[in-house]
Image (tube, rainbow over all chains, first blue to last red):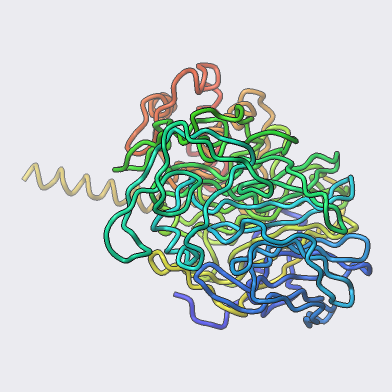
Length: 454
Length: 124
């Protein structure tokens, strides 16, 4: 049971031999990303919104060497701010936009905020995420889907957004033809009676076999790019579910973490691992009918006691590629970065923050999942733990005891590649299916290596 | 009388086994027990298969969506049988999903993972 204040003790975090972890800043409220200004000073974004319908103020904060937090910019009531990157003196923030729609914000060093693009389809379960700068100088970002698996249902009311935006639904990245599957549920909007809902349409709207849904840009479940001064929105790839973390490898390849299906809602799926993808332009990555390269109709994805899924799309836009790595189911793979330097070691490996499960809201599990940082060899998909809490069992510190990690949500290397900064969202309790985020419990950690090469 | 003795012996044996397991961590991550150095190509292949098929439910053999397996006393043949037949909520894996060669490699890796614990290294 968590009793504030949060305990913080680096000695409770285990690392491979030769590495050490220290606290850079505490008292953050729902931090989601870190970047560095022109002087190499870490700057953190506070989200301004958390699952559990907790609203605060989005902020970009400079972390002084004393650990003091100095505001650079204050956002509007349109969080969550999900990630930040700096480029040529400016900051770029993905604004999740649960009130006004998603945006990519450009923030000048003096704090002036300019929206480079607005009205991204971000009112739903998953938001606009993780900006990163490509080798071409463009800003790449992820856009999550509105729903778990293509159908708006009662679970979306549980998130809080369905009553705010009753007409919102998923948008495909290209024209699709539906099988006409419809799903019954309570009419959560009227408060009585039942409705049937099809794919890629508003709650309570039925679809027919052969019905065509026009593709749009921007769309749901996609990686898109935009010029650093705005304009030139491009679809890079779609068919993701929640492409939260984006990073370019030292070779210039784009990788993305993707939170996969939950056992919830009108079309639940079971046992679908979070994925690490290499993103190739023009590919379709399988949502809402595949997980990885396996169809969702597979028996392995049938939730216990529930029906096996049927396809929603009559013709699939392609065959999804094989993922680079399959992470823990419900681990909530979030921010990632690649090691680029000899001093830190593991050059070319992806370091991924695993936020951790939100069981039972996302599905039941036997043990706590995630709440750690892992490294992935992207050549063979082998995953190794890198930063975990000590103790007999894994889990957030507030659950297992001690002052270690809670909810790692971003991992990013310093510009010199010598330090790995880990953004810890803070305490997020689950009371049944309700999330209870705790303000002021976020931490910025820093991991460094004593020396030598690896 | 014989029944009581048998039950007592069973309870004592199970209790001793549980105490034995309780002394051994199920965790196998590098930060906690050091790196797992794999020099055998077959075990390395087994690790890749594990990552594709098993890790998602049993991360590093620990509990996750599914139960922990690092403490399992199941012998090698039973590990392979369980993978092919499935058990409870665990799915079965066909030869198309895990080839016979990969199954052998996977079993080697699963057993190596069990041994990758400073305390129980000599047990299996």
